[in-house]
Structure formats: C-alpha cells, structure tokens
Length: 473
Image 1 (tube, helix red, strand yellow):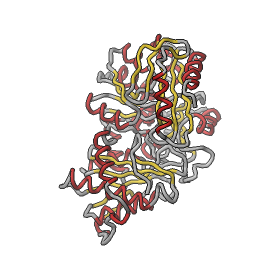
Image 2 (tube, rainbow, N blue to C red; image 1 turned 135 degrees about the vertical axis):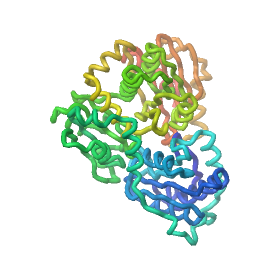
Image 3 (cartoon, rainbow, N blue to C red; image 1 turned 90 degrees about the horizontal axis):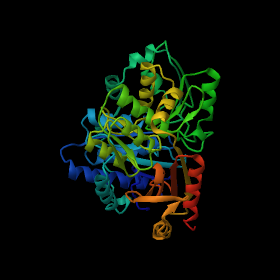
Image 4 (cartoon, rainbow, N blue to C red; image 1 turned 120 degrees about the horizontal axis):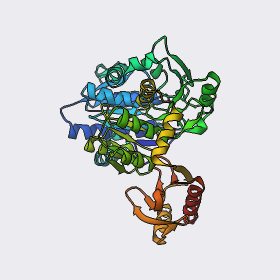
C-alpha cells in the first residue's frame, strides 16, 4: 500500500493497482472517521460528493458504506456535483465534515479525495497534518470497519438547493437576468456542467454551453483545467456567436477560466484583478485581500492604489482559506484560477466566481477589455510566465538541486539584483523594480514549477531561463 499524503488540497493519485485503489480509499476513510470520532465525538453526520471521473461514484459509495459501518449518518450526493456544493451543505446541515471524490484539474487517469471540515472550506494545514497521522495509523485495508453496514443511515440528496439559497443572498441574479448578456460556458466535461445555466434560468438570457456531457476521458483536452490551451472551442464559440463573455469551470467546479468578448483568454491574474476592483471600488468592501505567493504583483499595485492591505500565503487553498478566515478578508485568490469570497465558505468556487464576473458586467458599462485597460493604468505593465519541469519522482536529490540554487549565493537573476528571498513555499526571489521569480515543488504532481513576473516579456523570459540554467539537472 502506498503511503497516503496530502498535497496542496487533499490526496490524489493515479488509478492503478497500487496507488488510488478501493483499498487505499478505504484506509483514507477509516483514518478520517477515527479522526472525527476523536475530535468531534458528538457529531456523526458526514456529507459525501463526487465528480464525473471514472469510478468516482463507486468510490463515493465505498466511503459512504464504511462511514455507515462506523456509526455515521451519511448524506451522499445523488449525482456528480461541484466541490463547493459539498462545503455549503456541511455548513447548512451542521455536519461534522465532508469528503469529495475528485482529482480537480488533474488528467483523466488521476482521482483524489478532498476532506472538508465543519466550516466547509479546505482544512487548515495543522488539521491536515493531524488527519494524515490518523490515516497513516491504518496499516492495511484489513483494519477498515466495513462490516454490518447500516444502509438505513445512508441518504441520497441533492446538494444544489442549499448552495442556490446562498447564491441568491450574495449575487444579484435579477441584475444579470435583466442585462440580456450573452454567455458561453465550457464545463470541461466536469461536475460544474449545467449549474450556471440552471441558476440563471431566464428566457431573456442567451446561454451557450459546450462540453457539458459527462465524459471521464475529457476528450480533446489534456486535463479539465481552464487554461488557454484547453479552451480553443470556447474562444471560437465566443467569436463566432459574438458573445459577451465566456466562462469555463474545471473538473470539480472550483476554478474559473475567462474569455473576453473578443474571444481572448484572460489569465488568472487579470481575472483576480477584475474581481478585486469590483469588490473594492464598485461594492466598496474595504477588507484585506489574500493571495498566494505566485499570484501576480499587479494585485499588490491595485490594492496599494486603493489603500487596501494584502497578505501572501504559500500555494494551496488550505493556506489561503486559513488566512482569509484569520484576517476576515474580502477575497482570496491563487494563480491557478481559484477564488474565494467573503459571505460564502472561504473556499474557491468557480461557479460563484463566474457569477461575480457576470454581476460586475451587468452593473457597469465595462467590457472585459475596458476594465483591464483601466487596471493597467493603475498597476502598470506586468508579464507573467511559468514553466513546469517533469520529475521522475520528488526525491531528496531533486530537493537538493533546488537548494543548490540558494547555496550558490546568487545575487542576481536575469541581470536584476535580488533584494530578498522568501522561503515560505519553495523560494521566491524579490527583484528590483517589482520583478520577481519563484521555484517550488508541485503539491499534486511530480513537477518543479518555475514562475516569473517582470515589467517586460523579454525580461521575464530572461529571468526564468537564468533560473532554469542554475538548477543543473
């Protein structure tokens, strides 16, 4: 049995004979249930959901049956649903926790489990470390209590209703519906399929949805991740139909991709800057903003302009969620397209993020290009780039290669002086003139990620190339 360890959000693995198996799912579940029994002994209600991946429903049933055998009452989603739906239902139904079967944006051969505590968001790092110990204390599938399951304790339910009730409180749906805005949606064959259209059901709206059928192979795309290379069809649809905005949600519906009215992909930093501007300037929310260390510094510039505090965290929404709750932040965002909002569950939500964009467009006279032009006047030019280096495994040798980058006592990258080195997650190099670079290991895949943002595209490429050359693979 492979050791089960948490990444940036839960545990993920490749579905094969040794990694993500029914036996390992059982071990994860039993360890989680033991943790809940010890930490929340008076609450035995568990919420379980799953996405559209191969065998996700079967894994969810396995989890539910084991939970029933352990004396838990289980509410199991009656169909694939986005991860944020589970979080909302944990809160409204006052459950002890929830487990979501999903590998989020990973390729089709992957699956995973996300643990959601009683507050509905991503578990704090300290909670995940303790939970991981409970799971590792289960040495084999033989220790899993899977006998005499009381199926009367398992109830199928629709998680949509409670989620929709909260959406109505925080989004002006009437404003969107009356705007007659034309919308294109790419659900990427994932768990978010059909939900934005359902929430906005109105004869005045023109909504075109593609890739809305369930297909665990995610045909035509490498993975259900809303990045530009995967959104070719959505861009074409926006151009051909002259649509106002295109929205894409990832495999479990917690991330957003955005296409403007010209069919151009908008990177996550620009999406986050739009959301920040909307919350700060249009909605007049004055609380702080939380961002991951790899999110663009244009967010810092915009927040400084409006005298709003920003806080940086390591990559992974477990860190952003914790800081968001601690600082009572208005908004949190990461560079991979995950955004969370005050008034929801402190967890990234691709559907809510898309509705926020639609609400912004419906309440102002802005188009996406116009607001980005305004924001560029505030922050100046930033050029962002990232490169991923595939590893055979995340060995100690690989870790040493990264450390050697620091041990060389480098003072410059790309010819620009290093002012500061931040090591809260990998290494982030703060350079002169608001340029920066970073290197870290992926928390979900065997990759080294290189990041850079600079005032010119040429300089960004030069910095990241220099950093890669210093790794000495």
